[in-house]
Length: 481
Ligand code: FAD
Image (cartoon, rainbow, N blue to C red; front, side, top):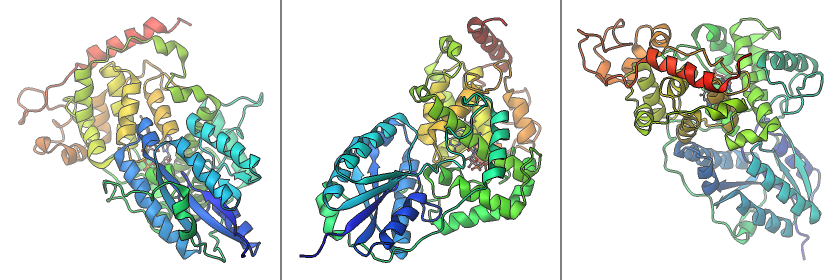
């Protein structure tokens, strides 16, 4: 009787890539070092749990499309992959129990930071270790993993600027390491076990993410070109939604088609980024990648955030008016404020929204419509292709002045002046609001004055009145200094 193959199993989750994948690298290396071993990659789709997190259908489809593509890419490097369909996170547990019975000797994976996922990972780790299976976790969601950037007294930074200073110093000290793509010497025949795992093969999605390419090489090339050709102008162009001034990589970073390590590495190679806090495009882009890490560190240090509690506890008592009618107008892009409406239609039509517009629409929902930021947070999550709990929660709490290092509550964006400043010719508005196509650059930002040529949705609130109400709402809960 032939000896069973010793299986090194890589459990892929939000690291859906072949390059710079520590878990995959270590599994393949271990399998290559032992003639009786093979490597198997596993992905388990968990639609019911995704829905509990309000994951958008476009992101669900994007993940499924990427997993299909990754199955092909991994096969080209000798790694077999099983993509399965479950319901809940907990349904993964029996899969690994079965794999352990079928000869798994080690599991390799990247931790996730959300609570239920961590709970599931602890259970599976305990199950497997009890069965004698080695479990290896590689925390590579961030260049500097949560817990590695701390104040002198060992606390998590609550303010971004000193966090960034410390982060940059560590980068200078440690550099950044990317793992190479590795080829498995032996291809494992999954047909032998596929049927025994008691879960069906992963289903197809609804094709809503068809406009987003999913080939890893293409995304790496997009990132390389951005670092070579566009990043120098990033500081100048990044706030203008009509210009393609940002990288467009957030969806890929969110599911790990590329890693932040690869971005930083490439940035250093192409743009000679200075590690000082300067104002070059490359340094400003690096800052955005550090914001991404800041919010992940905060989430891990303050796990209560996953329950959508405000970071500043006193703001929990704010008496939001929560008008369903106003909320619907905001969601549908019918508030009468063209920049807000165009932005919401960009989100609804494409699954993505420019960062400047995320700030404007979030501020508008909270500080003009007086709606609880959590309604907006959830709506964004249910629409975004790049939905990421830490970044979305951080962004919303920043805009609502309830978060750590948030905008002060008395800083209230004026949507009309923001529109004039960041879409001066009105071209972005025109792209998403055909009803305003004939407005001039002068009238498009506020098409409600007498004598303007077209009718538009009436403004749902008066900004100046709304501003006063916001100040009063915050004054009620904020203690005087
Ligand atoms: P670039 O400008 O090219 O930036 C490069 C990368 O840095 C991004 O891909 C992203 O991973 C990261 N990044 C940039 N800005 C931020 C930021 N402010 N906070 C954290 N990371 C950042 N980003 C998400 O990835 N997912 C979200 O769910 C999300 N929700 C947001 C909600 C609100 C209310 C706000 C204000 C911001 C949110 N952001 C979110 C941050 C930011 O808007 C997007 O990351 C950015 O628009 C993505 O475009 P890009 O890839 O071209 O970014």
